[in-house]
Length: 328
Figure: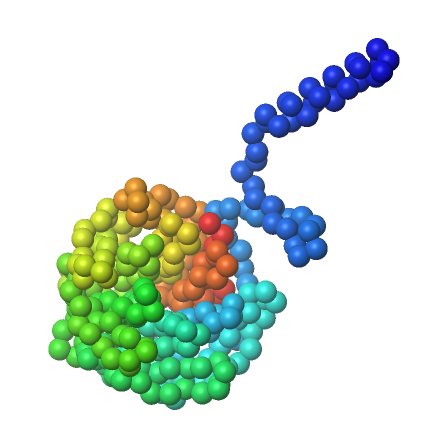
């Protein structure tokens, strides 16, 4: 090796050493199936999807096979039975089999690739306890054992293949602290430990094995209350209060964080506040706000993104067909 070659080798060695020591950027790149690098993911940002064919507020939502099913809801034509299906991969909508009864303000949950629509309202004061199950294989809805308490404006989460239905309003009482669980395998219901604070339209989601019930509407107005449910112990515990007390939000868990966006803070216009809760740290963090503030949209999480579908103003007016997508 000549002196010149040795000098060049030393220069290359030092260059690689410096490059290895440099910090990485905050952006994350994804690889496609062929190994090529796609555009880096921009975190804590919002984007828009193709608009919903029919604008609705208070729909129930579930994700099956990567597709987002938006069921029922209410708009300026009344209560609808539509099933609208969004494919995030192609950014397109298709029409599914309508639910047998037009409903709104129920809750959707998926267990074993079956979508369950639970409770809700069949009219302005028509509380129901029905449970409808939709199978994408048969493309049919079937009736299941009714929920013990007829109620709407509810939230739900799934843990260990059991659906937990939280809070809501009933014919005899508003702002319920009622919690009931449904086992799809046995088609049976169980009454569980009640919420510490009764509320309707709470944000409900699973973080790890804990079910969080955040915000909502109480007899005294919106609440910042935040509670965590331990299914194994059948008990609720107080958690750090939500910074923005509100009801009717878009909410969902991505990784270790529970995100709550939009909703109404005082019975007035919708807000765009977006905050995340870390259960381990028992701490809230302010995130990028929702571009179009909405009240009571449908909520879904698919492939690490939060989807907020439709919604409207606080009162039953101003319905929108927005698809707002949050990338944590």
